[in-house]
Length: 259
Image (cartoon, rainbow, N blue to C red; front, side):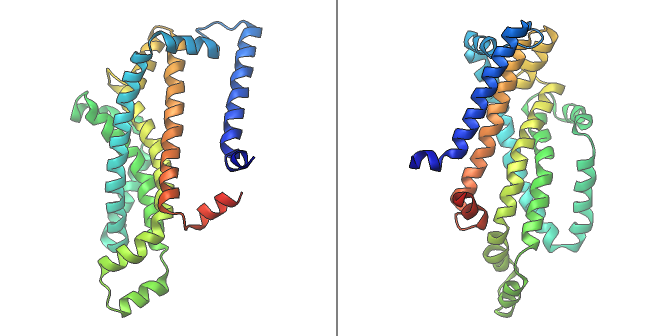
């Protein structure tokens, strides 16, 4: 009973997924849906079983571009946020530029990255970086600016340097906001990788979906979509697990354990 109480959220998610799959299967059987319109879950599983290595290869490529793009977005995004918080010039220029860039549809910019970087993994990583970085910068800036002003004034009175205030006060208080941005950013990085594969790519789950569309192979496209859903969910919860490990003291984690 204790195990069930501690993992009630996970059990609820699994139960909802199982019921959804069963209803989907029954409806496809009852209405005799054709595979090229809406394949049943059993048909999707059979498609996966026919060539698991094929799908794993493409999934691994998409995962690699996603993680590299996300890692670069975290490093550059945090560095930009620090610069924006400490520089009025960067606040008025770089921050405005990021907002304007985020307003441009990324699909419209993707072909330019292909022209500039070729058809390898570089444009996919760049697009993943570009889409993921905005949320990381915004939330990190919010966290850094939300630091307790009294603590900062006391540190300045004690002649602490800007670096010491940043590392000892601002960063610890900003970690919760940073992780919030990273949880959004990891999902956006996956979207960016797929957008890059749609525009130009010979490998990856986006490429599999495009090929399946051209051949009206809907079951194969659904296998790629299901893998993407599983991958995105796991990546999100990996960031959440890292947050729980690094921020066990934060109020959000304490409230999560009490419900």
